[in-house]
Length: 238
Image (cartoon, rainbow, N blue to C red; front, side):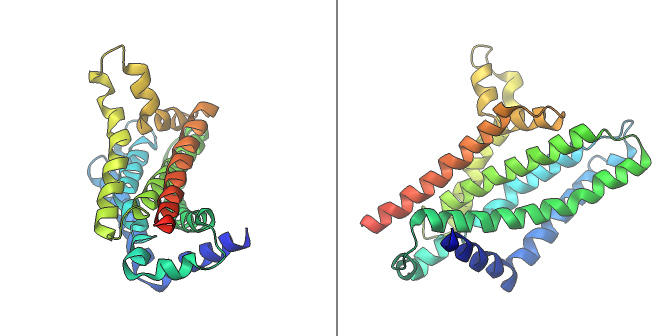
């Protein structure tokens, strides 16, 4: 566990020592604020709801988390510093988990800064706290899944650009799948619903906290973190 914390601290501080954290967080907040107020003004709706804000948060995660995670391993693989890191008594599992937790922590900070929206909406109308809590839990799990996908993509290539594109495309498939369910054949609908990020998130955003949603996102996270470990072990064998 100590090695995981060392990697986590190293990566988390690196986000703020460079420009990445100071770009990702403001751009995320700007995108959510501009889209929520310009495309569909949440303060001008007939009912007080967080649903438009949830949508723009999830879309922003899809676009920005690949940029956050693309350097996790790709830069070290390109410069050769990964070979030096791998010579230390640190396992691939510890490296992956430490870097993943650092990205997850930064994502959580960005998400926490949007809590001003439910507070402000609660001052102008009757905001149901259940969907707010469920929606934020859903956003956290969705962001955690995107972080795992991004770390796996970064462990698969030496190019940050390629890692970004891979993470974006892989995350886009289950994200966009939820918006195509209305056109899906009835026989495939249950399967497509189960694979869709949006379907599981929508259930949580209604205030319905079901273990099936948590197990789904947990499985996605575990799958891609395992794949990242596999990629690193494969490189060690080479």
